[in-house]
Length: 301
Image (cartoon, rainbow, N blue to C red):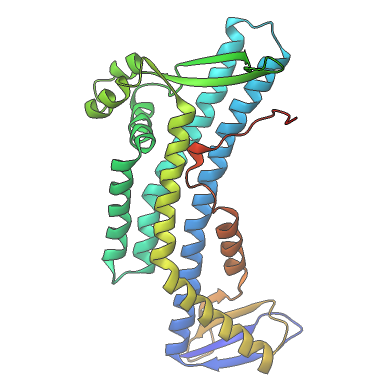
């Protein structure tokens, strides 16, 4: 067996032979970086789906301001738009919860305590965030029984100074509708019954996103040391090849060859997955306590 770094382009014959140990180390670091990026990509999709929900609510508010003639069918359109956004969000929440421990197991095959720490954090968040608990149960309700948005209001109210009118759109869940589902968690149902007959979904969803921000912060902490080590291994490899073999790294691959020189294992080698993950980490770091914030179009005087 022979192990090499090689540029697979017609204009270059640059090649560096490496040991089997180096081949394993670099290949493992490369795979770890892709697993870490996959976690960040799923978290990014989760946030994008949350943004989609907020955009639906904001769009409905604007429509409520501009178009005062509303039919029953118009309200159904608002409900269905919100249903679509919420169901997409719930599906992505589930995907993140299901996929992340798989990635952690792939990254840490000999450290099951990393995956256990993820599940323990989820349990803690479940106990602390009502929005996370309710959305978790609503996701099961949606999968087996009904839709998540039961009613919708478009309204306006004058500010205390009466110099401006505030318009909003509110999607609700109905406690009575959820109670019809015999499989719905009775303890959670009791919690939300204490909040009234219908509950503003915006608050629950924003609390849910704060909970996921907590979970993802834990994931980043669990993987930081490995991420740093994997980045260093790949970076050092690329820098050495660029300095001593070919400064152009386009088409660089890490390969295992048999005794006759045939490629039996090949992977492209680059650092774009590192740049992409860092970009997503920087982009998606402000969601903690999102339930305490809101967007307004009010003009400050």
